[in-house]
Amino acid sequence: MAYYIDSLLLTFVGFGIGASGVGGDYVWAPSLLVSGAYFVFFWVKQDGQTLGNKLLAIKVVREDGKPLDVATAVIRYIGYIISGFVLNLGFLWVIWDKKKQGWHDKMAKTVVVKTDGKSHTGIAIAIVAVTFLLFILLVIGLVAGAMVFFKYAKENPDKVQYNKELQYQQDTTISQPTY
Image 1 (cartoon, rainbow, N blue to C red):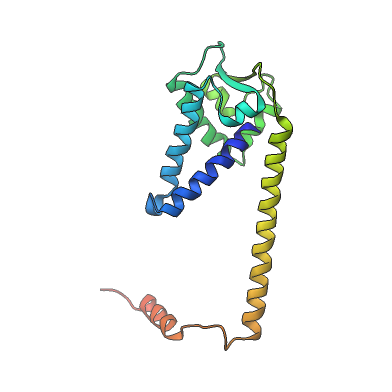
Image 2 (cartoon, helix red, strand yellow):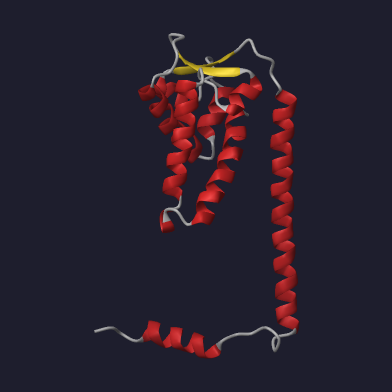
């Protein structure tokens, strides 16, 4: 849950990076660096707690109970990427693991422990639920909008502009061999 809260925050940052044009065609690269810096900073400098961790009153420590150093935090972040790469199976692994470790924890030899703080699980669940609901509504809106557009385009082909000259140029350019 904490990871999804942090990811939500980083998604907005990523949209900002994408909108700014930083990275050009490789917009994922600066987003990945910002995300990595976020997690490493909070794990190392904020007692193993990201903002999502603080909300849930948990923190990340090494298996021996000591705080994370930069190398361990970087390994854990690389593990985050791997954990999420396969349909988030690495994160879901905590459900079946005896030590409640995800793949990223196993790679970095870390564990997540409870803190003395008050957990705000209800708020975290509400944030994730509202975000999921908004995402579903966005998808429904996009699908409905596309359906309306294509219906309108089919019923009013003369009102939907189509540049046949441009299409002809593209078609002939593609089909002509280059020497």
